[in-house]
Length: 274
Image 1 (cartoon, one colour):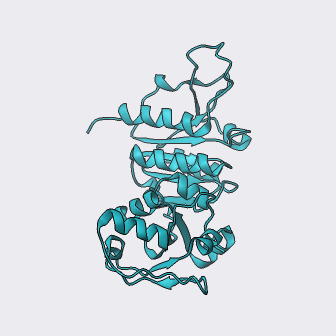
Image 2 (cartoon, helix red, strand yellow):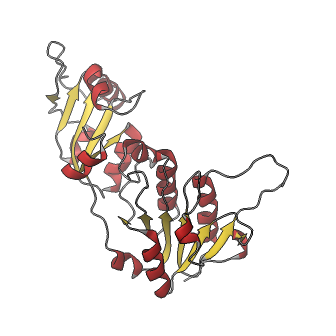
C-alpha cells in the first residue's frame, strides 16, 4: 500500500529497499526506522558472511511474516525485524529484482521556508521533475556536494516514491526539504539576497563556468521535456547553460540530473573560502 503517494503521506511512512540503501539509512541515523523486513534467503546469506548463528524463521505452510528475534548486526538498531519467504516479499516490494531487504521508515518532516532561507550555501530547486531516477540522482548529488536543502515544486514526482528513494542510494532525508510553488518562493529568496540561477540553454543564458557562487545560491532545474516553467523563466533570474565540447556532437541536450551535477560540482569547487 505504501506504493501510493496518498497512502505514504496519510500514514507518514515510506519504504527504503535494498541492502545498500537500508544500511546507509541506518548509518546516517537521520530517518526513524519502524521495522525491517527481509527474506529468509537474505538472512541466511547474511549469516554466512557474518558467521552469526541462530534459528531461522520460515513459515512455508502459511507463507506469512514472522518476527525474527536473532541477535545479528541488524538487530543493533533496536527495531523489530521480520522475515518472510521470497514469494511474500515480492508482493510487498516495488523492485523486479528485489535483494530481499527493506525498511519501513517515518517520513521526515518538511522544513520551514523561513528556516532554509535563513541559512547560507546552495539550494537545489526542482521544477516539475517527473522521472523518479532523475529526482533521486539529483538528491543524492546534492547531498554529496553538501547543498543546504531541496525545494520541490508541485507536479514533481514524490520525494518518497520507491524509485526516487532507491536512486538516492540511502541519502533520502539527509537534506532539509519542503514543497512549494517556486515563483513566490524564488521571489522571496531574491529579496533576501539569494542569487537565483536557472539551468536553461536559451540564447540569453551564459556559460555556467563564467559565474562563481555568492554564498547564498539557488540552482533551479526544470522538467525533463519542457524545462523550467514559463512563469519562473519570466521572472528575470540569471540563466546558466552548459556548452558542448563540439557543437556538431549530435547530442541535443544533457540529462537533467547530469547537467545539475556539473553545476553543483562547479559551485562546490568555486565556493567562497571561509
